[in-house]
Image (cartoon, rainbow, N blue to C red; front, side, top):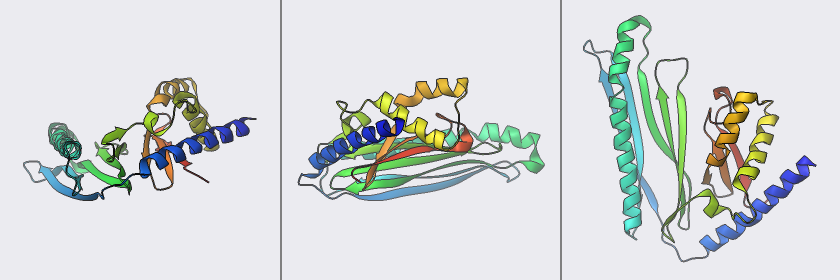
Length: 238
C-alpha cells in the first residue's frame, strides 16, 4: 500500500512539473552565459607555517539583455564571496591557537567555495554553491546552497513556485520520499533524529536539471554525517 502511495505522489509531482516547465519554456528567451572569478590565499604564521588555506570562486552571469534583476544577482554572488573570504580570514586566530598547541600534527584549516551550474536552459538557471570547511578535526563539513532563477519573468523560484501546492504538500510528500530513501539505506530514526527530521522537513532545498527537480538536505540536516547529503530526484517525465 505504501509503495502505491509513493508512486501516486511521484506521478502527481511529475505532472505538475511538466506543466510548470512548459509554461516557463514557451517564451521567447535570451541566452545566458556564465563566467567566474576565482581567488586563492594562504594565511601563514610568523614561522611560515600555513594556518588557513582559502580558495573560492563565484559565478558571473552574462547576457546581452542587461537588467536590474541580473545585476542584483551578480552583486549578491560577489558580496557572498567577499563575506566568505572575510569569515575565512577571521579563522586565523583560532587556527594559530591550535597550531601553538599541537605544532607537530597540525593540519591547516581549509575554506573552499565553488559552484555548479545544474541547469541553464531557455531562461531557467539553477546554481549550487558548494562550501567546504575543515577545522583540524577528523573530517571537514560540506554545505550546499542552491538558487534557481527564471530570467524570463525575473524572479527567483522557490519550491512552492516550482511545484503546485494544490497537488503537492511539501511537508507530507517530502517526508514520505526521504523517509523511504533513508529506510533503503538501512537508517532507522531514533528519538533525537526523528525530532530533527520532523523539524527540518519543510526546509528542503532544491535545484533543477535538464531532466528532474532534485530535492536535497545537507549532511547532518536530517541524518548522521556518515550518510552524507540526502537527495531525491523527481523526473519531469518517465
